[in-house]
Length: 430
Image 1 (cartoon, helix red, strand yellow):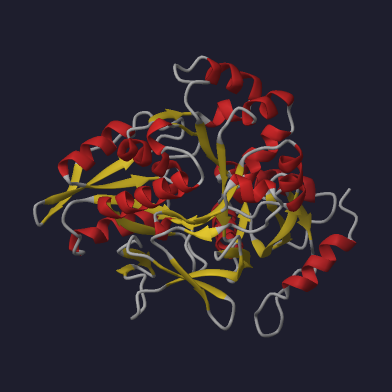
Image 2: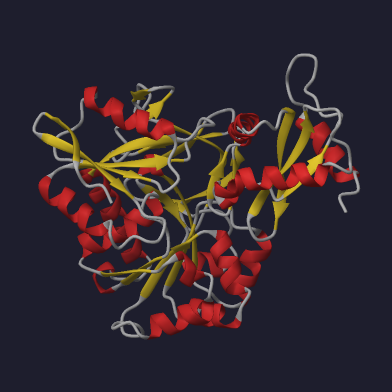
């Protein structure tokens, strides 16, 4: 794991930390060192892109705030993957606001056991560690593999020193919650938790209903890398009472909705810069607001509070298993990689379909370049395409591949996605 200083500017350093796919334990000492020394740490994801490296290189000529911070990958709000600069004081402010919210929900942050099953190169995986550090709470990493085996998960947690003695809280994405609810041991584990934040994607109504039947203390929330994690959260009491949405804004956050339905966020802990179209730029408009890229409503909540309801993405991104996925970028990547292997593709279109477990999954429609690829040759080409995408993130891999000889954009060069969605559901896919 690389922890060598890459750049030095104005007396502070930007270090590179390659986050291992296997877990977070090796990352935490580097985080501790960066905080203690006031350095900047670039957390590079296991499956990083060339654009992430370009963003890191550009930091050599970018003015960074003194005191250090972290550079995190972000799903982005404008239809592209990105990176954000978050100074340590912004994470401190986010942790303080979260602590205040917990006290309002009846939990003392200092007494908690924070369980962390999310990757450290995501803000949702970084913040449990940072919160525990600021609050003086206990922090326990849970591996991704352990989360897929509820019986082993329950056994591992029962062996923890403070299990059953301190209130345990966790952040999950809906995919993880669904898997756990689907098994008896998973339910037993969830029922021993004091609070379960759920974010990263919309919470499906059937899953919410099942969680209420089981009396699980869910706290649906909303946030982003750009906001240093959650900016609104619903208390378990509100959730169990049947309230929908993501709850009320935290004390240090302002929310408003523009005329076109776009959610705007204003808080002092916004990322100071974001990598966009080959350069580092500010997130804020002239009045300090950040455009989230999500459509939302602000409704009347409990008492005099405002309740946030997210209606969906305004750009072309989809949420799949807690990951933000951009179909157009994947279409381009697939064509490029296929062509590099001599598998010409005249057209590729990826469509989102509903998935009970993932929220949404992608399906791929393909028109091969060779007219000789007919129904009999398609299975072999499909195996090649599956092999090409085998190293992609699970949420990026198409759930199904469809041979579509007539696939083509409109005369204006635009995809009529709804037309091809109808085609997909009309054909016999075996």
